[in-house]
Image 1 (cartoon, rainbow, N blue to C red):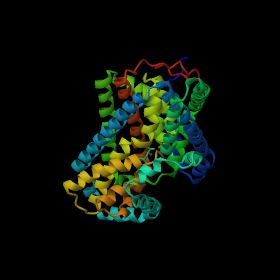
Image 2: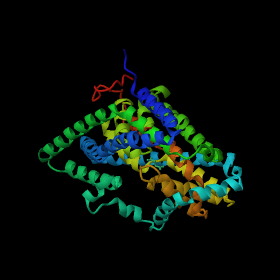
Image 3: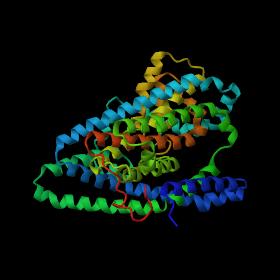
Image 4: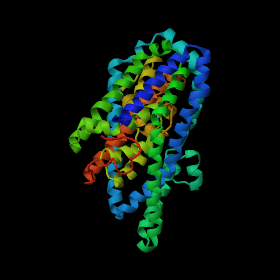
Length: 436
Ligand code: ASP
């Protein structure tokens, strides 16, 4: 019998996880079973993905840059990448603002619901608010200072700061390109080999993906708040999901179609497992290994491009997050009765772009950075409590958009650089069936 394609396996894992989680959540013993015996496997799966992230960035970026050899090519590719990332982020925010202004979900939440939400989730939101306020109190160039680590091991510790690691690795690789090739050859050979090993490890981890997402979703269902909370926030969640849907099913595949000539189904079949994983883990950083593998092997993007464009994208390009921040800011303002001018809406475009760049690629980070947007338009931070209850499901959706945006930009950059080829799934993937 033909083995099911990976994205179907993952999807089945997700559905089974939700169903089992729901059934077991009906009794307290059932819930405890999920928390004690199923949730840990989800955690192990995420840990495995995170475990591989820093070594992958190091090996693949060094390989990618040293394969390029020509440093000027790196800077043109860098400019195109950053430019495209900015364009997609602005498009996402404009879509988010349009949807939220048309639907106006803030006006649909009753005073009673608003009070209940603030009461129920005010405490939970407090930690986020505090983290967010300290993020807001930073100087204008602090983000730039933060990019340059003073100790590479500290930067890499606890997957703490991907951008600092990327900075070091690019710097190292440039040094490697500039030295005598004879002396550099063993170093390059080592990182090329390391890259292969890590890619094989990702293959092995992906064998567990259907089970990993099963455990993650079962635990999520058991631990989520009741349905009535969701219903009172339905209009807000609808706006976010509609905006994200327009990005994922409209803007990206259309841009890929027009610029690279690749069809919708080609794009989705290639990237679907990464999207599903992003949805299940709510972390672009944890999904990065899979985004890279799928983009390279299944979307035909040359390794030179993926190894440079995707690690940077996972850290700075968060279209889903920026869209969500724009919608959430307008929703909270509306619910709290703060009127927004056109100038405020423009401020949202600017600050949501910056806040999404600054958001870490981990669960819930977008909500922490939202406070920057709220502060810029004069909306009280305590309003975060309003959206706390539905943040996790929306985080899952926006993370899927974030990784899709990275993959779409990688394809477009590859096309511009003449580096877009045919899928090559056999290269590393003998372990699971990916016959797309
Ligand atoms: N979870 C998102 C990501 O990893 C960031 C966010 O919270 O919006 O891409």
